[in-house]
Length: 321
Image (cartoon, rainbow, N blue to C red):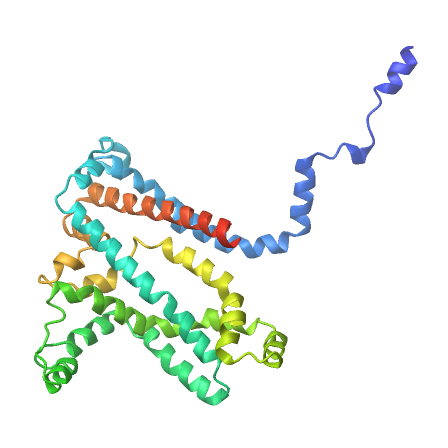
């Protein structure tokens, strides 16, 4: 009996002793070249996106520069409560939401429509010429764009007002009237970025099989019917992904352009969260309060992104993850 027990205690064969951890390490070493490609991007996110998160804690502290982040006293949600009880809270939130929704509703379909139209152009040289023309505004600096808007929309010398007066109307102070700020901002964004946004949709259109169009032509479908039944369904997954990404930044409008277009007269509609954070944080030196406002904005964006991603996953089987 003892010999039998000794036999049973013999070590298992070598291949059965390999643990899951060793197997994973083996696969990692086998494909180490692929992981080396990922390493720079991973380091970038760790250094520039995760390490700075250490400073987010000042949103829950009364930050004092001479004490530093770690020695400043904790105050809990005091800064958040101050922002929620502020008389500017409702105005800033509504301004941000209204401007974001206008940009999303009017700006998001524009590149899709333009890409569908460009895809129908058969003359290659003319198509490249049109693409060059519509891509060019994207490369103009935001500062220059803001300067052009003030110049073109000037009530005294702007050619837009000269045109209005030539047609018998009265000059409009576009940059000083709060009612015109959102329209001017959204239209200038569409003019500047619609052409550049068509690149992804044109790439998606080229992936659609030409045989589908040939079959549709044989069946008697015209161009409009082919766009509706072939092109639009073909680019729909791309459009859904870009829509999810856009809604993830719905509360984070570009600070630079809004700030440059602001005047004391249009502040009732042009003051949004990002400009408010800049003024209270850097100009007013209220670092903890502005960090709390910025953190609140990021949380709202994150919740919207998760919600839209989940809705898109259930309705179209297309999602970010």
